[in-house]
Image 1 (cartoon, rainbow, N blue to C red):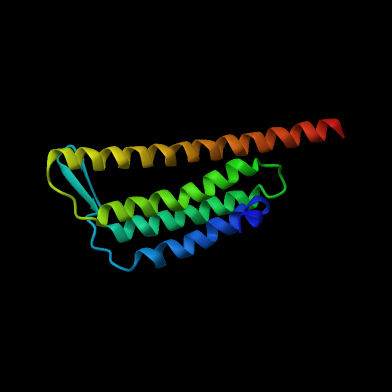
Image 2: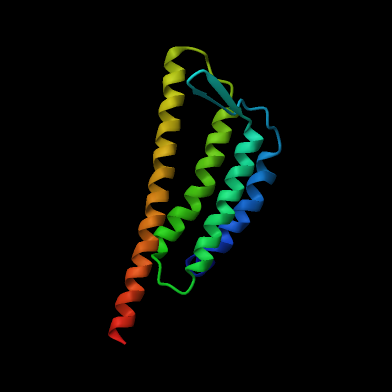
Length: 145
């Protein structure tokens, strides 16, 4: 599957976009997110987060599909594709587990979530860098021919 990922990363993202809701539909009783802006609370359920992330994976797959003629870095393709699926799955599983309400366990959970989000953010930055390098490599190849 990873050999195919090197040549067609959009296929892996589109497969993950289908698998992500199917895998996480098993027991969606997580809290979701609560966002407080000034005097207004926005509550986003976990089902909505999963649907939005699946749409995000489809859009990323579309960008990879548009870039299929360009030379992209295989390592960045694999890192980005796996991080886009594994990190959100990890966060959903972290949200399902019952945690000890003590302060020490809460800080440990927040620390793990922060590390996961940092890895996800680095994967997104790597995606943008990969696209820019793809444009650069093609420009250099066209100059040489």
